[in-house]
Length: 119
Image 1 (cartoon, rainbow, N blue to C red):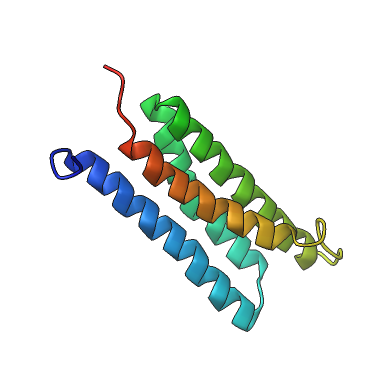
Image 2: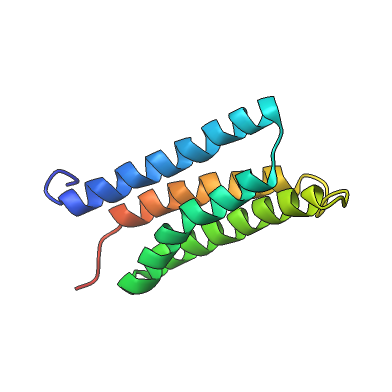
């Protein structure tokens, strides 16, 4: 099924890269501490994915996955930015919750790309 539709295979590959990238970035951040630059780069790296979903007029499942991705990156970046400017944090576990939501959002994008498309 996936081999017959290379576009879907690329969407799954992108989703796996996105989920793994967030997970490995979390490991790297925990070893050196998150910074405002980390938040900024996460916002910038997720913007093209969200833009693509918006421009494509994608399926409902793909749009929901993209919203999950957006809420995750917003929580993650907001927590790092707030901490940078001296506040305690957005709320306890905001950055990890955002990271988990980003990983789940990327996985959901991969799953949504495998669902049948309406003609």
